[in-house]
Structure formats: structure tokens, C-alpha cells
Image 1 (cartoon, rainbow, N blue to C red):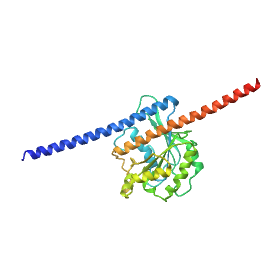
Image 2: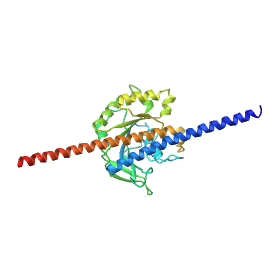
Image 3: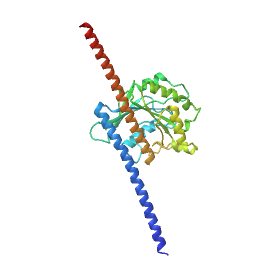
Image 4: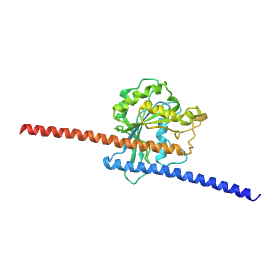
Length: 303
């Protein structure tokens, strides 16, 4: 009996280790499949337009907008260890004072395209004031945007135009309660995006805080989806600097759920960009066709 118990314990440990290893492998394969889908989508878009994808990130103050930009970089670059800050973040103040283009280098494919996408980090929206329709339209159309490119040299900045092809709308999950200022302003914001012909993905951040506050994040996501009129609402925990007790810790442990949802968001954005470019091509083709028909009519009349 004294021999059987240790053997039984060893067998249980081996079985548990096997289950954990299998689970880890399955998760790795799930992430790689999403990476592959993004590679394929990026390749198709590059072949048809030779232009990187342009995605604008909108959000309210202290809702995790810039942290989500940093999360996208970390996930697409497959980084581990300390968090590298591409977009400036802060616990209480608006650290992004101008629209900035942060170019995501293509580290998933071959030499082309050089950049996978342009991420535009924007100044925060105000939850206490009415939506600035003109200001948001200017941002969406790429007016007065500064480009911020990370190379071997120090940060370089220059004025560029980069109109949005898709929008990621970032909101703090705990602040999306019915009757709150964010909830009240959401329809007006969505109306502006729709009027500009843009599709969007909603990202609810600070998931852990919401769960600690006994918020059912699944039910919240469904309610926000109905309010925003979209099927794509994700509730995630960003990779972010820990400001607890005034200490800014850059040490971050990668999380499967954050990686998986971030890749899903990027993949959906690429699909929206494909649809956006296809719609633009149809409009341009229709205009040219109309001009051709008009020229034909004029020629017939002159004859």
C-alpha cells in the first residue's frame, strides 16, 4: 500500500502535466491560426491597393485608449517581458494631445508590405460635454495628423494625411452603465461614424475591474452591442503600466485571453477595411462610368 500511493500520486501529477501541456499547445495553435488569418488578409489588401491599413482609435479620457494601442503592438510583435510603450499613457490625464500615426511594422510576413497598418492614437473624447461632431469628422478624415515612426533613430515626426478606413471605439466597461454619460453619448458618436461610411469595433476595457465590481461583462457587451448597433463588442484587459501605489511597473505577463481577443479585433478590422475599399472602388467606378455615359451622349448629340 505504501508503494501504490506514491505511484498513484505520480500518475496524477503526470496526467495533470499532460492536460496543461495539451491546453497550452491548443491555445498556441489558436493564436497562430489568427496570426495566419491576419497575414492572409494583409497580403490580399496589399495586392489590391499597395497601401497599409489605417485604423483610428477613439475613446474617452482614462478609458484605456492608448493602452490598447500598446496592447496591439505587443500582440502583433509577439513581445514578452517588459511592456514597450509606443503610445503615451497616464492614470488620470489626457496624455495624447494630437492625433498621431503609429506605424505597425510588418513582422508577420515577408518583406512586403513594410508596414502592416497605421494606428492613429487620438486625443480623448469628453464624457462630460456634447460630442464635437466637426472635430471627430476632422480626425476621421485625417486632417492635421502627426506621424510618429519608430526607427533606429529617435522618434521622427511630420505632418501627414491618413483618413480612417476603420475605427476602434474604446470605452471603460465600468463606465458603460445605462444612463451614464458614455452610454448617453454612444448613439451620437456611432451616427458620425456611420455618416462617414465607417464600420467599427467596440472594445470595453478594464475587464478585471468590472468583474470585481460584480458586473456581468457578457451581459454588458450584449447591451452595448444593441446600443451601438454592432455585433462586434469585446471586453478585454489591456496590457498596461501598473500605477498602483504610484509605482509604474513595466513588467507584464502575457495573457491568452488578451492576445486572442486583440487578434480577433485586428482581424475584424482588416475585414472592415476590405469592405470599405471595395465600396470606395464601386463608387469611383460608378462615377467614371457615369462620366463615360455622359461623354457618349454628348458625342451622339454632336453627330
